[in-house]
Length: 332
Image (cartoon, rainbow, N blue to C red; front, side):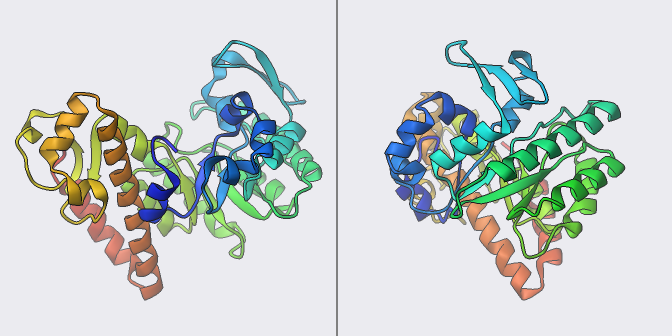
């Protein structure tokens, strides 16, 4: 949870937490987590939990893995030991972890991969998805499929059809927000999202900047994940109504105002920008925790307001105005 406790997350309105199957498989291991009562018992988080399948690591650790029809062989980032993930193992691990939502094993190709690679990859992902569906045995755990296909409309269409045919509990859009231009990302999403079942969750994998969140919501996305809010915080950057603020900048050394006057979180109501700036420049763990807490609070408050605007029928106009003000605000 990147330095935040379950109580911290609950207090700022977090609704669901993601667990990384790749890392949990390697450390501490799924059996230890299972013996502790699953991720809920192990972490103390009582709300919903989702685990990814390890597929993103297939993409991000390209230099230390090998793909085959059977699955993916990879080298541990911790000790160099060699492991192999098959679709069946990915499901068994996630069942042992006990998350409420599990993901099928997929490959997330790089954005610059050519059409032939994307075509072969999405078909392998579809075959892996069918094996995951067959192996999945926990009725109390939802299993989501993943649509791939890169930036190629006809490949996205093929992946969409292959994934829908398997009738999953929810559907994710993968392989976007991996380096492609934002306009192309939204173009592809706008083609896929309306075609996904409206009675199932629609999950965009890997977006966390405030503008991007609002843009994908406008295209029908219900769920998304990203490490961006806490990663920015650990490097001293806060998401605020005034844009991004780099608290390590000299301008905040004597700024005694709140981090974000519109935010009710502990960091904003209990400490000044000057103090938070000091903590960050000194690399104090308290600074990392407080700014992480604030950034998560900022995103959850943004999502709650987005939901309110959707229900009131004013989302489009509100979103355009919010993005215009946010992008025009000064950035530290």
